[in-house]
Image (cartoon, rainbow, N blue to C red; front, top):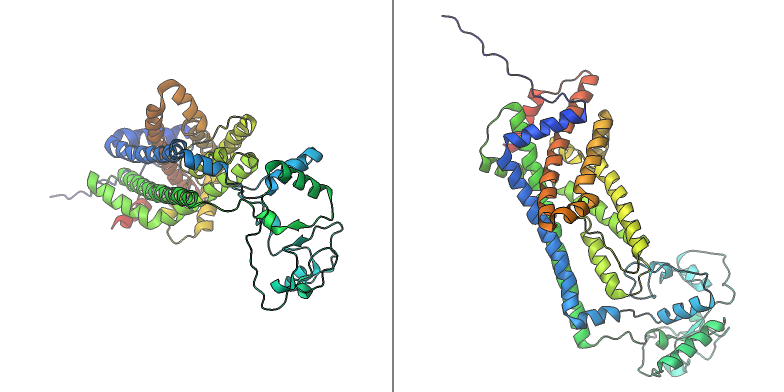
Length: 462
């Protein structure tokens, strides 16, 4: 009786060198496992819907509450707003960009509290030979009454702290502010600007700084709702994308090696893989995109004077890393168009850099963030042309341009459904690309990457 050895299993289909081959393999995977990929698409659809709902809720919360809208419009605490306007009137060629979320001119990064110009300031922190700036403006806090802790010596029309303030004196603000009308205040500020040696009363700077109990309650309520909502969105983002990436990785590897796993088992094992190996990387990816959105918001929308409009733009900036919610501000059309164009290009480049990093992080959890990005870029260079073409297709279909075009044709709901489905499709295609690039790179240095290496990945689920 003869015993025949079983025929060797065919090698997994991972030898791809073109975009067409990669997309064909991805389509085959979709048709072979429709249930699991539709489920993952619905998971991303739920997340995207929650992001849009959260953004709409926070915007409508202000629109429905006139007190909040009025409060945001009055939140410019700095008295320099009027001064800035008058200064622009006298010097129209000078234009200063406002700080992002600039609520007060006092204490911005431009005017660091610990970076004074006097010799006394600099001697405390670092030696400097710099002389006081000519025509500098000194600030007098009161009338230097000796009862308040001041000596009788006031030099150079200003304050010399080592000589005036006595040791152990505590600063105190007294309620002796003279209330000026709007016209008197304008004339006062204009006269102070014209006088290069003017002495400004500190009480004038804190005029209007007080908030009523109702306004303070409304402000804390708004900050609380914003914080809780944003924390929920960040947590949902991390959980959703770790689950989706982990499940895709496990399902594709099972398909390539011919391993069977039930639907529920695939969901459970794949989500565990994603949570264990991708949480840190997904958080880092969000942080980078969030920082990019904030910097672009500073550049394009930093000069919006209306705090109500600016707050709504700020909300869009905070949700940009999760969905394509680029703002369009009436009256700032050029800035809005510039932001959308630059964001599209930035997202294209950033998405290209991070394209296969999720799969690198799952395949080798010992790598740090920098090593993951470096290895991902190395895989992209191994098959650069297919990688660039796939990324361009992904950016057009799943990006802001595709969303705008699909909304015009099919509406918001179908657009979200289609883009969620295509996002999963491109995740699978990037995993197929990663295996193809890994095979080519290992083969070029005399190594092998095939069934044995893929089966080793299945041990991650055990």
